[in-house]
Length: 199
Image 1 (cartoon, rainbow, N blue to C red):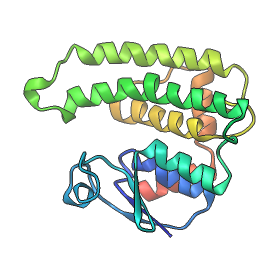
Image 2 (spheres, rainbow, N blue to C red):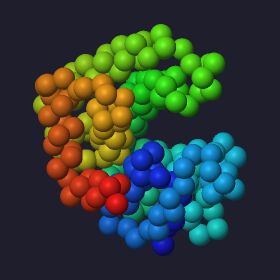
Image 3 (cartoon, rainbow, N blue to C red):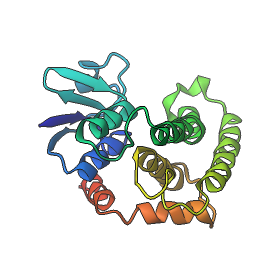
Image 4 (tube, one colour):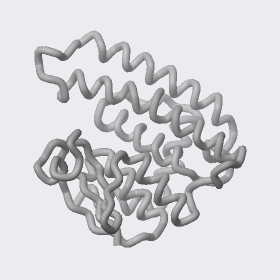
C-alpha cells in the first residue's frame, strides 16, 4: 500500500492520476504545501510526497516515474531510444510548460506581496503560448507525444493544461493541442481523479 501526502489541488493530482492509471491501491493524506504534515517529511514544504515502506520520495515527476518503472506501464524501458524521446518530452513539459505556470503562480499568490512583479505574468504567458505552439509541431498527428502509447509526459502536460485553463485562466487555442488535451481527458483514470478532486 502506498501513501500519498498532498492535496489533489496541487501536483499531487499527477500522482493520484498515475496511481489510478496503474490500478494501484493507495491512501491519500490531504496536506497543503508548508503544512505541518508535509514539513515533518519534506523540509522544503512542497507536496506531494509518497511514503513507500520506510522510505519517502518527493517531487511528483520522480514519484510517477518510480511507479511507472516499478509497475511496468506508462513508460518506455530505460536505455531505449523510445525512453530518450519520452524523457525529452518530460523535460519539455516541466521546463517549458510547467515553468511559466509556476512563475505566474509565484507572482500571484506564492511570493510575499512585496516580491511580486506584475510584469512577470505577461512574460510567463508569452513563454507558455510559445510552448503550446512547439507542442503542436512536435506532436504532429500522433495520438500521444511518444506515439501510440500514453506515457508520463502526456499526464504531466494535461495536468499543466488544466492548471492553465482553469487556474491561471490561460486558454488553449483551438487546434491540435486542445484536441490532444481533450482526448486525454476522456481516459477513465483521469475522470476518476477528477471525481476524487471534487470530493
